[in-house]
Amino acid sequence: NSRSGANQQNRGARQRIVTSTKHIIMGNTSKNTADAQKAYKKAKKRRRLLRKAEQLKTGNKSNTGQQSSSANAKPKWHRVGKENGAKKAVDRPLEKGYGVDQINELLEKRSKAKEVKDYAVSDEITKTLVKLQIVYDDDKRAWHTREWKYGM
Image (cartoon, rainbow, N blue to C red; front, side, top):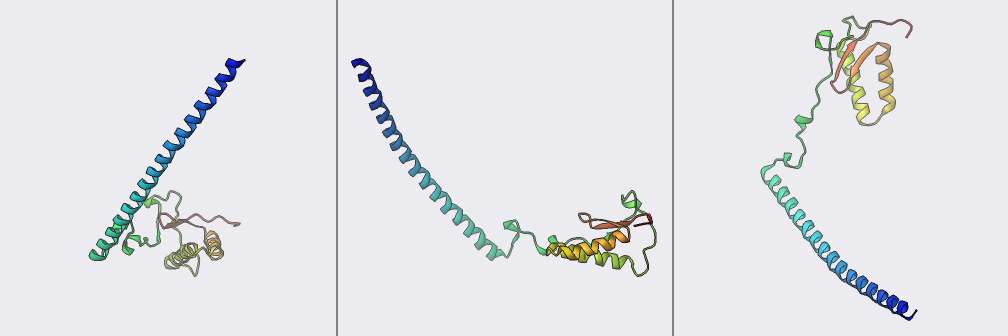
């Protein structure tokens, strides 16, 4: 029993030494990590300031990943037919009071309403387009008419 007690004391002493060594190592590592992070942030700030100064000097905003306003301009809404890839498109006259220009205008208003998150206006325009049996694709900004289905 005396021998087991001595082993337990030695084991306890070894654990204390290992624990204190870990604290010393971890302390140094965390300090080194903190210093490295500060240096990285400082270098990043310096690069950002240099980029900003160069932009002001050249007047070019495309370096930051922003596109110019002409590149952001979306294409206008347009009518497509079967020859343009709309398989179910039917070339039929629109309802009285509506022409191609009026439909393009409705679709443009709907797009702007969605951009400003005015979904009530967007939904009303969508209902009008559905009644006219007009199918549209927001990504391609294209629309076409379908064959009349009565009872809608």
